[in-house]
Image (cartoon, rainbow, N blue to C red):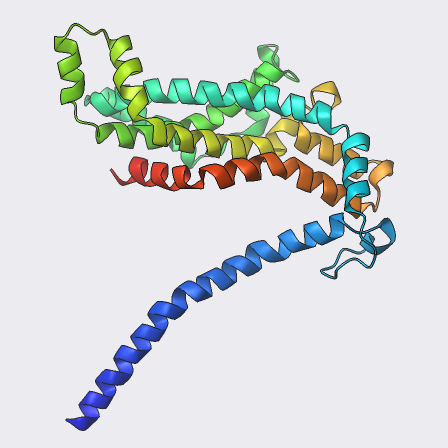
Length: 287
């Protein structure tokens, strides 16, 4: 009896240790995975060129963050890259939200086999990566290669599946009686969509907005093939160009300073709306 009690007490104490130790372990691993690269970028961006030739985690002996960030902004033409990024990302987000909300409303309320097949085909974009060669060839045929409208069309097509997936799940949780009552009062479909569906979609709209902005803001792969360089270069492409140029050769302190400045808008957006992200994902994906 005493041995059984000892074994039971040992098991319960081990379970308590694991219950409280598991979150600490997760936080430790997350801190190492995120904190170490972040610390490397921050400390290197504050070092002079001589100390930043070989980036490391050591604190700089001589701090010069103000000069590094000023040089990165001026020499890297960040203002032009910022305007180009905004000109591409903002219209893409608007189109993803409008088209995604309209399509999600149809997918959530219609139950035919054709609609179900269309929905499955639409959200397959979550798993199937776009073929960049095909995209570039199609844009050339339509005369949209190396243009901002072409880049906007690519981003809209890439992230529309994510928007539709979350919004469809959320709309299915909205009682259909609200729409039926509005129809009985004589409301047209467009009025129902604008006055009932869209206001209820605010958490998911906030989530989709932030996710699309984060992905498109830091994208360089598709932007490189669609936009190329030149005057239409976005911030990531501009960073690649200046980092590979002779001006920034081995100038890791300027490259990392550019990275920090380029990331600040999205970091601010994420910190402000992180609760919206969690609530929107759980609301749209659980149902």
